[in-house]
Image 1 (cartoon, rainbow, N blue to C red):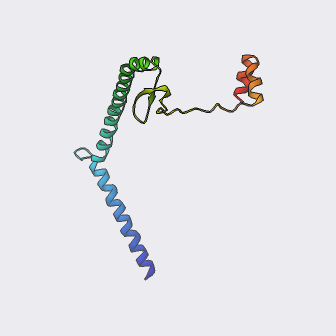
Image 2 (tube, rainbow, N blue to C red):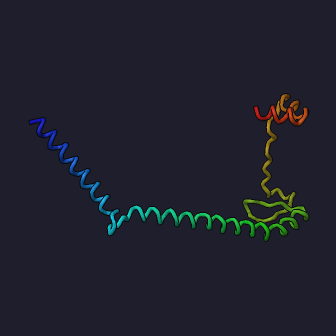
Image 3 (tube, one colour):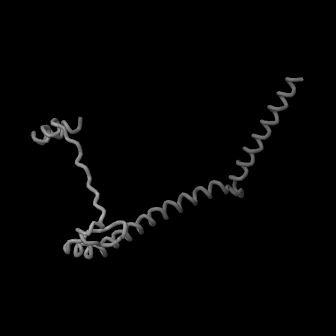
Length: 129
């Protein structure tokens, strides 16, 4: 009983695997479709072309925005104004409307100061430790 059921189950699984393998082999023979292979290859080539092009376009757009906005930013700064990121416009420096974010100085200990005062080769050697 149990041995024949186990053998029958194994034979059914083997037949299913053979049918899948035969189907895959048949589709990649001459005259077969081989759809999965070409679909993956096409998507890979498409991504290879599209992704760098889109990155280059974004780069060009951001550089252009920076070039266009820099003269105005320099002019506004020279007049004593600061950029308010919340209002997204230039405001007077003393108006209290601008958001000022102070970045804290990185912590330095005595060893770092002493290493920086030494010869350059010693400083680089200790910095790489």
